[in-house]
Length: 82
Image (cartoon, rainbow, N blue to C red; front, top):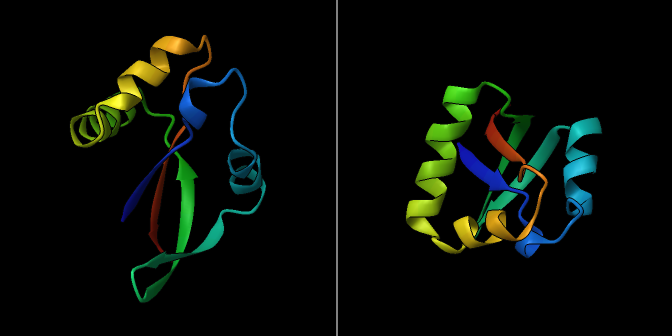
């Protein structure tokens, strides 16, 4: 599984891919030379979102800074094997 964070550096609007995933959740994710067919879902459960967000911030602390720059809640998606 892959966690996808729609931060766009804390800009006021979501990145375009967020809207695309909401309409077309079936994706291919390339990780180095491997390609994985996956289905992405926006994480709306508060506890699950918090857990994934906290992990993302631990790995990439700038996400916390980005959230502080914007009034929108930065979207979190989970891409799982299709």
